Image 1 (cartoon, rainbow, N blue to C red):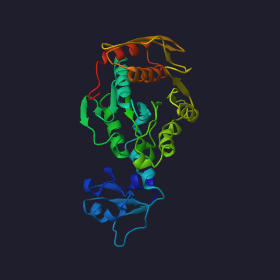
Image 2: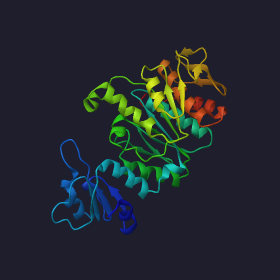
Image 3: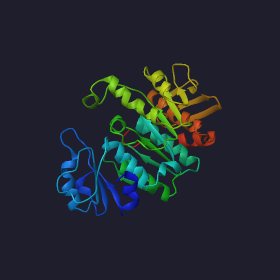
Image 4: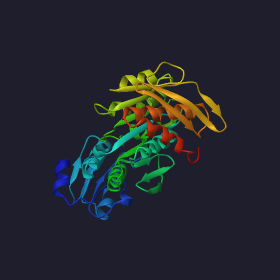
Amino acid sequence: MMLQELLERLPVTSIAYDSRSVMPGAVFVALRGLHADGARFAPQAIAKGAIAVVAESAPLAGISVPWVQVSNARDTLAALSAAYYGNPTDDLALVGITGTNGKTTTSYILASIFEAAGIKCGRIGTIGYRVGGREIEASRTTPEAPDLQQMFRSMLAQGCGACVMEVSSHALSLRRVDYLRFAAGIFTNLTRDHLDFHGDMEAYFVAKRRLFELLPEGAVGVINIDDRRGPEMAAAAKRPVTYAIDGAADVRPGPLTFSLDGLTFDIRTPRGAIHVRSRLVGRPNAYNILAASAAAMALDLPFSAIEAGITALEHVPGR
């Protein structure tokens, strides 16, 4: 049975990747982990009501439900999730933010800008997930594909027109964000982190770069060109827009005024100047404001909304 057939012919109620959370009518996608093959848990999933199994391994003996063998279960999990939930990101302005530092603050600034523009905005990241008007505690920075697609579908149902999402290197490597349609991607910076998972800095960079390789035609890649890996990241984006404080870039600040009360400066863009007054403090937040502003500009949000959204955000929880 092919995957599309599986969704069309069976009374599928959900897509599951953890046998413990299977509900009746689920398709169980068995993922290979570092220490175990999820196919081992297919009998438990079936006992809980799974009506089909998708796995990289051959069917186990005695299995009573359809078993679809695939070459990459993670790719299939993402594809099935998108199809089951009706590709909700086709109707949502989704902005993915990747990098070592600044993702959370940049996501809050950009969400505030969308709201100032009159566009209800969801948010997914380290601190939590905002779906419509509801805040949900975060289990991980970037959830697994079925959880993401379910949240996007709920955002649309609750009137959201946009979502900003932190995209971790783990999520990119593990294909959790495949089959999403991004309107834009943002790269903040790259410093040493997560080498226990990626092995070395080159593998970590390659994982981050995948976000810009996933962008569809027309989507903008917003890149911090002051970062030493910025030029390589920009080369991966089909429609790059660069920002910087020190170097030449599409989006740059005028003279920066730092104080304990916040930041005041103009942002120079190809479309004119944005006047910034922010309660956020310090040079790192100047970069975060530039990133969010560059993305908002590239997505054609009004400058008045960019200015109002930046001013409205007084603080970021835990930052």
